[in-house]
Amino acid sequence: MDFGIARGARQGRPTPQSRTIRALAAAEQQALAEAQPAAAEALERTMRQVRDLAEAAQERLAQLDQVVAQAAIGPLFDRLPPTTKTGPM
Image 1 (cartoon, rainbow, N blue to C red):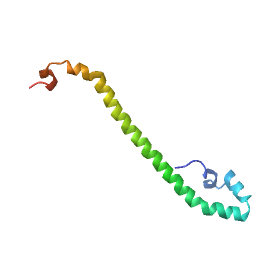
Image 2 (cartoon, rainbow, N blue to C red):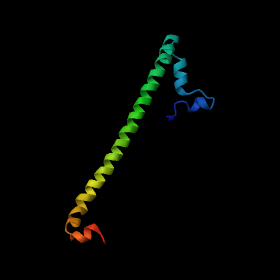
Image 3 (cartoon, rainbow, N blue to C red):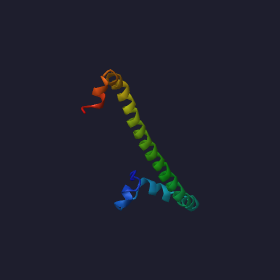
Image 4 (tube, rainbow, N blue to C red):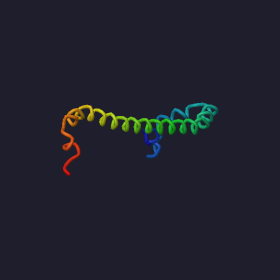
């Protein structure tokens, strides 16, 4: 997923983030470089969780659609004679 962070770098131009990082002291640059893999992993994990939650929400909405439809038209079907409910024989 591209959040535009490296867009300039892909085009051979320094990004505002890369200029900021170059302005840091060497120790701070090293600390950021060491923290980056863990931060990237945490971001990936979070994005997976967001996808999972979105999928679960969609499934739940589909279930609620069925419940609402049943509540809306179920009483109408209950009033039909038994032969009509089962269809033609």
